[in-house]
Image 1 (cartoon, rainbow, N blue to C red):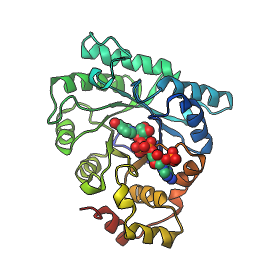
Image 2: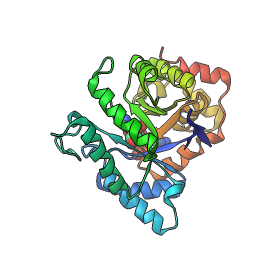
Image 3: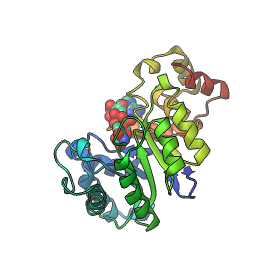
Image 4: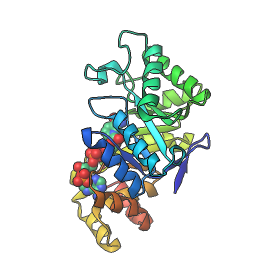
Length: 279
Ligand SMILES: NC(=O)c1ccc[n+]([C@@H]2O[C@H](COP(=O)([O-])OP(=O)(O)OC[C@H]3O[C@@H](n4cnc5c(N)ncnc54)[C@H](OP(=O)(O)O)[C@@H]3O)[C@@H](O)[C@H]2O)c1
């Protein structure tokens, strides 16, 4: 299954996330793709991601016959503040140069000539969008228009910021990637803006940000009815409400189980109950 953004570019409906895997990144990305994932999320941000090791996994996979164009690669530009002191670009350069250098370095790390999706890791300020955001976004628009990336997007964004970006950008984001809290109706306000604008909403930390919800009897009842795991219920719920879930599992069995989530179908009532479970 795929999801299609307003510019008609498609993304596989489940994405494998590569954060916090350190030196295990090469093996886990290889395993994830061999298990059936074809969309990979990373970032050019050494404190949380090993983008170059994702590239190493792609080389291993290429030798086994899995071609670059059969995979969907997404990475991110992270500002100096989010880099923990080790920037993959000249931290003293202007932002336009930083984005171009970070993008070029991502291409080298991943051994590719283009990206499928390039994401701004977070706006520079908590409220509204400022000059720094617009400068970075303009470079990302240029990369997209020039065909260096098929999509551009933004992560860790509020509904108000996203509305402003959709309103004022020359090229609207095609993807949004946010931490998804059940207590916020699974990020309902942001998802609604995405739906109106044909933006693909990617949700992360669906399990880890919602531990209390996972223990709720309503979820266990659904899991029992479907003979599914709790994780499968949450991932399938996410898909059925139009979200593209990320999983960062390090377990081969969980990879397989997560990918099998689409075998189940929750009823409209079950979807409504889970969507509002923590409101
Ligand atoms: N844009 C951002 O700022 C940002 C921030 C955070 C994450 N992300 C992206 O999102 C990805 C996923 O992150 P995440 O926070 O959702 O997940 P995660 O923290 O990487 O992993 C999920 C946790 O749930 C456990 N788990 C148990 N059963 C599972 C199952 N059946 N399937 C999956 N996990 C299961 C995993 O343990 P096992 O390993 O034992 O399965 C793991 O400890 C990251 O790798 C990254 O690519 C982006």
